[in-house]
Image: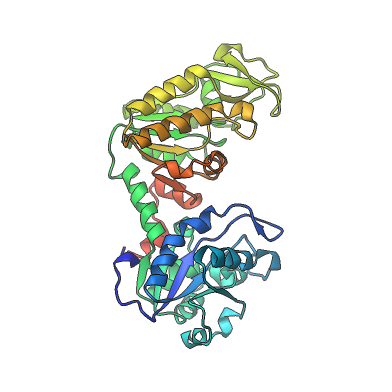
Length: 392
C-alpha cells in the first residue's frame, strides 16, 4: 500500500476520503465519538496539505434508501468543533453531481457527502457507481479500516479509477495487527472472550500456531468448563460446540500453545445479583457464571507478566454489573502497568472490550485499540480484506 503520509504535491487536489464515521446516535446526539477522534490526524494532515477534502462515509443500515435519522449532519457538527473550521454537508444526489468542478462552488475545505449507504449501488459494489464517485476527485484515500472487509463501491470499486492511498489511521491499524500476526515478539498471549466460540473458531485456529498462550474467558469459557466435566448451572453457553472445543484443545496441544480457561469463577442467580466465588465443582444448577475468580485472575496476571505481545478480544465477565467487572479490570490494569514499563505491545479489539475500556477511560493506555469489529476479526482469521487488497 502507498500511504498518503508519503505523498507530495496535494495542494488544490480534490481528495476523496473514505472514513468510517458510523458512530452510535441517540435522537441525533452522538453517544461515542471514538471513531471520529481516531481519524482527526488524517484530516489535520490533509488540511495542512491544502487539499480539498470530500468525505465519503455512512451511518447505520439505511438499505439504499434515504433515512433522515441516519444523516451525517451530527458528525459534520462534531467535526466542525474539533477541527475549528467550517464543514459543509452536501445533500445533493451524488448521481446528479457531474464532475469535481461542482465542489469549487464552496469555500469550505472540508465537504461531506450525505450517507453513502443511501444509495443501493454502494453495498452492491456497483462498478458504474464506483466509477462515478471516482470522477468527483483527483485521488482516493481509504482511512476506514473497519469497513475494509466489505466489497462496497466506495471501498473496492473506486480504487480502480484513481491513484489510491491508505490513510494514517488505516496504516496504524494494519501495523498493529501485523505485530501480532507476522512481526511477532514472543512470548505472545491472546485473551479471547465473547459468548460464541463458532464465530471465533477460525481466528483461534489461525492464531494458535503463532501463540504461546491462549486464554479463554467470558461466555465461551463455559463450554470449556463443561467439557472438562463441570456443572455450569444456567450459565450462557453455545450449543452443539463440543467438537469445536475438542478441536481447539487438540490443536493447542499439537502446536505447544498453552490453553488456559477459568479455574474458579464468580456466580450469581441472576445478572443483577451480587457475586460469590466458587470452585468449578461447587456450582449449583440455579447459578450462572458471570466472571472469573481470584485464582484465575492471578494466573492470567502471571502470564501477562511474562508476555511481550498481547491481543485482547472480549471481556472476562459481565462487566455491565460492577460485581462482575473485576476480572476485566485486573486484566486491564496489568496490561497498562506493563505498557508503562514498555515491556509489552498490546492490541485490543472488539466492541464490548472497547466499550469497557472507554468506561474506565483508559483507551489511551494501550498501544492500539481497534474499533474495527468485523474487519479486525477477519484480518486475524487470515482473510484478505477487499479494501486493503484494492490499495495494494
